[in-house]
Image (cartoon, rainbow, N blue to C red):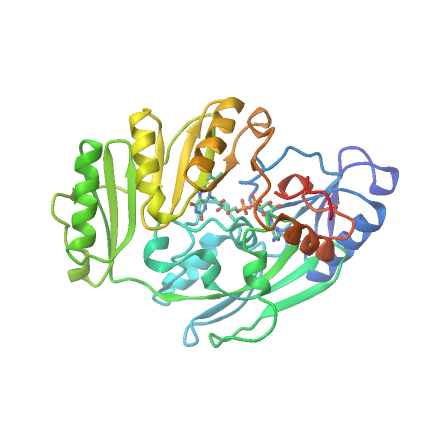
Length: 365
Ligand SMILES: Cc1cc2nc3c(=O)[nH]c(=O)nc-3n(C[C@H](O)[C@H](O)[C@H](O)COP(=O)(O)OP(=O)(O)OC[C@H]3O[C@@H](n4cnc5c(N)ncnc54)[C@H](O)[C@@H]3O)c2cc1C
C-alpha cells in the first residue's frame, strides 16, 4: 500500500493519503481508521468532492490502486472489475466486443466504484434503466474492515439482501466498493439526439408527439426553450420525430452550484413550466422525475429545497462550494432512521465520509 501525508504519520495524528492495491489492504486501512476514530474520505476520480456537508478527513483512501479487470466474458455479457478501474476502460473493453454499459455516462477520470457510489445514472435512463440495474455483484470493505459480497456474477437473480443496490448511491458512507460485476448490453446499432426549440408550450407539444407517435426515446430532456430527445436502436428506430432536427446532446445547466431535484414523473412538467416562467437554467428528464437546477448561493439552495417540497419531492446539492453546502440535503429523508441503523451496522465508528450521510442529524429513537 502506498502511503503519503502532509502532517506526519498517522500514529502521530497526521493526515494520511493511502493507496491500497488489494481489498485486504483496504479492509486493513478501514479497520485501523475505525479503531483510532479517524475520519476517512474515499476518493475515486474526486468528482463528487463538492457534495454533502463539508468535512475534513484524517485519512484519504484513494481507490486508484484497485485497477484490475478481473474477468470479462462477452458471451455471458458480464464484466468484473475492481472499484478503481476507470469507467472509460469498461466502455473501451465492452465496445471492442460490440457491447456497452449504457446506464453510466462515463466522464474522463471517473471510476467504476465512484459511478456506483454516486448512483448517477445517465440521461438515457428512460430507455436503459438506472445504473443500479447494471449491477450483478459487489464486494465491499465495510467501515470496520470486513469484506462483504452481495449479489452474484450470473444474470439470474440470487437470494439474500440486495447489497449491490444498497451500495448504489451510498456515497462512500457504507464502505469501499472494491469490486463490481456489471451486466453488459449489446451496443445499439444507432443512436441520435434531436432538438426542437421554441416556447414552453411548443416544446411540450413536440414532447407529446414523440410519445404519441410510438417512438421509444431513451431520453426526453427539457431545457429552457428547447426539447432534446435521444433515440437508440436499429437504424429505423432512430428516424427524426415530427418537429425535431438532428442536434447535439444538450449542455447541462451552469451556475455556481447544481441542485438535483427528484419528484414523481407526473410532477416534472409543472415543475419545468414553473422554472421556465421564473427564467431559471435547468434540465428536466421527462419520464424519470429528475431535474437539475443551477443555483447561485445558499439562499438559492434553500429555495430549491422549498420548491422540491412544493412538488412533493426532495432536492440535494450535487455540486457546489462549501458555502453552498450548509444544508445540502434539505429535510431528513423518509426512512432516515432505517438509513442510520444500516450505516451503524456497516460503519459502527461513523468514520466513513460523514458529510455525505444525508440522515446524519437524525436522533436515534
Ligand atoms: C454536477 C455533476 C453531474 C454529473 N452527472 C453525471 C451523470 O449524469 N451521469 C454520470 O454517470 N456521471 C455524472 N457525473 C460524474 C459522475 O459523478 C462520476 O462519473 C462518478 O459518479 C464519480 O466517479 P469518481 O470516481 O469521480 O467518484 P468520486 O467523486 O471520487 O466519489 C464519489 C463518491 O463515492 C465515494 N467513492 C468513490 N469510490 C468509492 C469506492 N470504490 N467505494 C465506495 N465509495 C467510493 C466517494 O467517497 C464519494 O462519496 C456528474 C458529476 C457532477 C459533479
